Amino acid sequence: MVTGDNIATATAVARECGILPIGRSVLSLKSFPQVTNFNIEKLPSNTVVTMNGDAFCAVLDKALLEENVRRLILDSVCVLARVTPEQKTQFVETLISYGYYVGMCGDGANDCGALKAAHTGISLSDLESSAAAPFTSTNHDVSCLVTLVREGRGAMTNSLASFRFIGLYSMIQCFSVAILYYFHTTLSDNQFLYVDLYLVDLLLIAVPRGVAQDGLSPHKPPDRLFHYSVILSLLTSVTLQFLAQLLTIIILTRSSFYSPLTEYHPEPYENNPCQENASIFHVSGFLYIFCALVFSCGPHRKPFWHNKLLICFGTLLITCQLFLLFGPKISWLYEFMELSDLPSYSFKLYILVIAAAFLAILFTFEYKISYFKLTTINIRRYFPMSKRDSRPPAVYLEDTPVDPQAHVTSV
Image 1 (cartoon, one colour):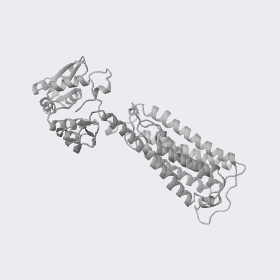
Image 2 (image 1 turned 180 degrees about the vertical axis):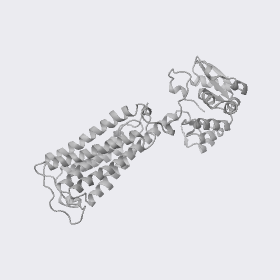
Image 3 (image 1 turned 45 degrees about the vertical axis):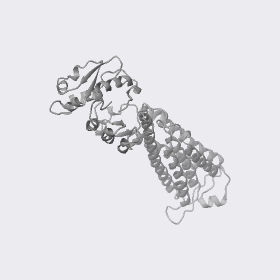
Image 4 (image 1 turned 90 degrees about the horizontal axis):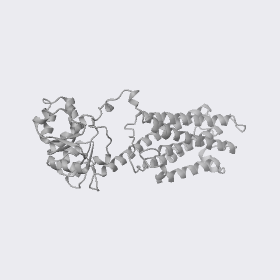
């Protein structure tokens, strides 16, 4: 708690809120001499520290204290009272300089500087503080913090899911074209349009519409695009989609009905309607849709069926794909798509089974192995930390777990 009120008043309110646990003694630092004579290492484990503005100035005086001692004291403070607006801002900036991600709640003009300096400033008022804070809560209490973290994690996860889908979509299409080039053909212009303007565009609109989950997950989402879990997910997805397309071609070429392409288009790398083209077109269409479904699941968001837009678009696209694969041959449609008919119903079932197996394996790896296993190990044991991850851990007075709700109070 950081407040301009008297330290006794702030201490009493902090006890009621649970910031100062019941049964613990309080050590108040109120002057320069108390700070200079204070030995943080000899602080009893059942004692918490409060501080006023004068003592805070002494702590920040580099001539009085060493940096590590200053850090230990500020990590131990539960209540900072009788501070000026400038000192609130200075306190936030000091925490940021130590590598913390700082959130700030305030409802007055004296909080504007700190709200602007914090990584996340939340105004609990529609007046002056709302002009400085990036967020303004219509519910004027700090329960908005939970909502903000929950929605922020959901938005971050949706953004990463969109990035992964875009990356995988391009790789699916790349491998589709590469495989077809081997057979002297490729996707037709209208097939490209169907994939790019119909399949992928609708899915890209729907994937970021995931709904944030009701509670907070104990695991944090990746905080950057090139996080190891995102890269691992992409590599796994790329490998699985390539195997799915390759397996489809292998089954096709070993089937009794297979008729290889013998007459080629005079222009190189042009579409020649053939069984290879139809097989890759059908299986890749399912892969696009199933990738979107998998990336729309996972922690920090509700299951994908809560994403109504994805359900609508997904149902529409799957219906179209099933119709193209199993429906009757419509001459004008096949001519428009430059698509060849597959004579074997059992091979069409193979395509559907391969796509379904891709969905099951990718989902299992993503959310049963990759996220809940690999993202919870201490990866820093095996890889050096970046500057962004090298901030020292917070110092706690006691290892006893504390109810996180007890630390929510007004600033």
